[in-house]
Length: 330
Image (cartoon, rainbow, N blue to C red; front, side, top):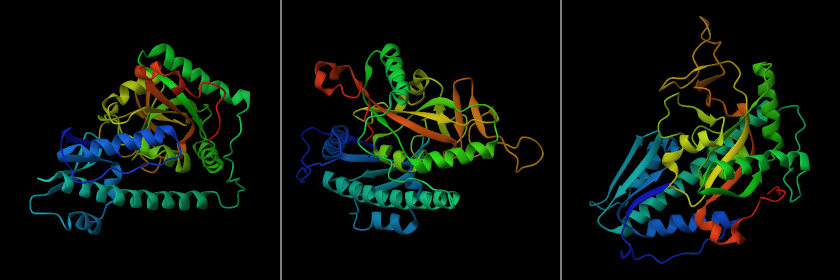
């Protein structure tokens, strides 16, 4: 996912359409939108995905193998995001190489997730963690309060988007490592409730392995190369405004964030600076004014729910408004 291309409504790709079968209505619509955009491409398409950085020389060689002399494939980094641009005289060649790139990225992301889980399991050695906590049950009323408040904030503050569904994130291992990180930081201040926007393609990864900086850097990461959060929904909308065209829906994550000792951020910082002379003692996070916090360790944030938002056009069909009832764990 994360495809941008030059499209031509009448272009003939020579490829037939396929069927999508995903776990939810939203996932099906995102897949359909992505495929339609790809099939409409005329001669150029760009894949946006920060996991491109993990492709090795062998993978890039495989991507270029079989390419015709008129096909040009470029890997580059722009506005906080790694990209692969494919240009060819034949739209079919563009589609083939985009699909090859996406297949490689799926494999890279699976291996990345396995690595994160290995580290997490090492941290949780000796602790009892109930793994299979996800179930189709109603959440207790006290837990449902926060997502409902968020729904009201979005509805009242932003004309044009509204919450369609709330997906609570319940992952025992993520909760455990978050508590371990809280003890490690030793901060007396409670976690902050903050907001993050994530592309559709990473929603399932978030629920499985938590926050990673590769998911959704803002277009202008001027406070450091970390994981960004906003203290308000309005701030999250503004922070990721450049990504508003890439998905059918918008996905906002409400999370508890351990900011600990914070200091103002600067562009190009890959970790917080030292507190004093000891380079091993560093700040826990960076700040961008009063509203933005940047962390560099995903264990410092615990996702609580994903809020799927639609646009005013959906209001014409009331059947699409789902989830403003007591939410269900999915």
